[in-house]
Image (cartoon, rainbow, N blue to C red; front, top):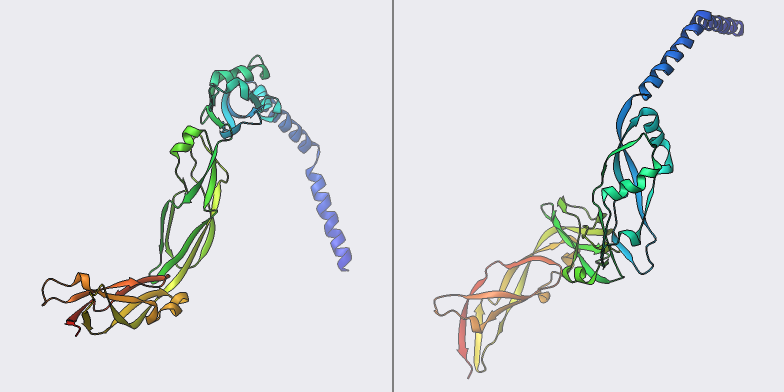
Length: 328
């Protein structure tokens, strides 16, 4: 019963759709297509202005020449013509790319240039007689090259990297940390480092590695366009330790004693490095050469050395009483 029901439903639906496609509907559809085609042809027969992109490339570069800064990939050309022709240019590869021979446009030992009029001269034969070139635009018209001169320079971070409160950055590295720069000798002499794009990373709490682009250097080419920035973070902790006070620069026959003989230090260090905070790894000294001019004043202590990896260390009470005795 269900099968017969669905068969009747299908037949009724099919008959309904076929009735829609009757002769009157087909006539209407025909005239709609004709009117649309007529409108389209009329529209394309009008004169328009259209900007198109035309690819350009430098060719026949000698093997001993390195292009350090090339021309833009394309120029923007504004054409005027009937719509039929403009549509043709949009889908026709005959006008692009334009090949510019290196020897024709190298104007000096390290620089070349091309002008809008030269682009028009090359492009004109590829266009129809009715097409008018209104303008040719590009980001720049110069290119630079060198004869293989190069120098390896350090990569420096440009910007700000700051940790979240109670965290610190234990290590921040760039890989590679130096890159080769190609340019003419005179230009290389003025370049001392390569900088990253501007970085502004705040409230960093987790270690991360990310790519970062290098700043463009005019008339120069970088061996790589980006480097890898690695940031290692750690959570801060404070450790208290007692450290003995050592005396230094005491003349022979004299002894210098401090009161107290041990002082308390507070050391801020990353959790990963907390194991290095031991009294024997710190050197707190009282320098005889820095005795105060008045006996009523106290002697200042200083931290002479401490382990690597310490974020901050200070003596809780940085001044002490002292006693000078002559040895018998």
